[in-house]
Length: 295
Image (cartoon, rainbow, N blue to C red):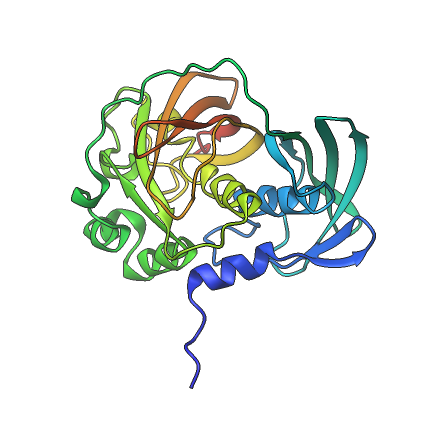
């Protein structure tokens, strides 16, 4: 008897887009969710898969810039159309539009480069505890079941994030409601299982995870618990990433996040992803809707 698929198997299946015409792909949804929309990190990761499948194998994504236009419907597939904007000697540029119900829900531009040597420096990795000393989500979340709405909600969150081992360095926003903190948060993450060596796959998994916790730092500044406890309404607006150095998403990565500002119903957050040996692998910036519900 074959083993049932793991959550990581399910996620990898969602990232294995179906080609339906030249430069047109179809992706499934199916991630458990507490809100009636597709998780933004999934759409961004699938769009990067679509773009990457239209460039030569020797070119690797070095940046992406994207906008979330409409909520994705988790009940129907998403169609990704790729425009081959430019193919140069070193760089290739792709534009991807994700469509559901005849309307664009997401737009991504990505640039790919052939590897070359160059000047190199980076910021140092900030201090952080060893990830194996931190509680897993399965250990941490049940302690806050009362805040989150009960064991059933905890189980749904664990299923939604089952493909990823994500560990908070400090308490997450919902565990410190009413207590404003420095607008900075850290998590360690890696996939719950080994991945193939395809570099694009590791970039796409990091893209998927990068949308999970980035706005936490905005919430911490105001002592807000977030969407999980209903004291703010939030959604990603735009998302940009720069991939600096090779990494593996199935090995521990430190996601260091901070928020320089929030205003006008929007919050800005920036993140840096480091490998466990201190290499700066990815930079991330996102702006999102962060609204306080009107009573």
